[in-house]
Image (cartoon, rainbow, N blue to C red; front, side, top):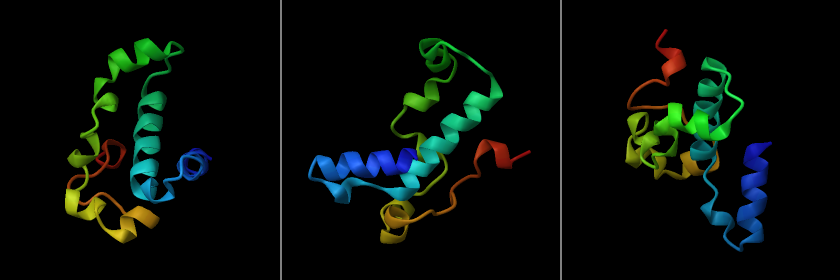
Length: 90
């Protein structure tokens, strides 16, 4: 649902090529992980407790930039190749 909204926004802005499937899903999964870790009703408090989520370089902890630059990653889901997501490390 989030990815559909991002795609619609990109199309509306006249830049559908800016949509990136892996980046969109990875961000949603990372935010979702932190939401499940600690239920916080206040968004500002949530961000204060999870500052990495506002770091635009966050995905580079999990993906090589060359991987994210591929057409496969832009159009579909690619698993992290630099480090696993936190919920996969046990």
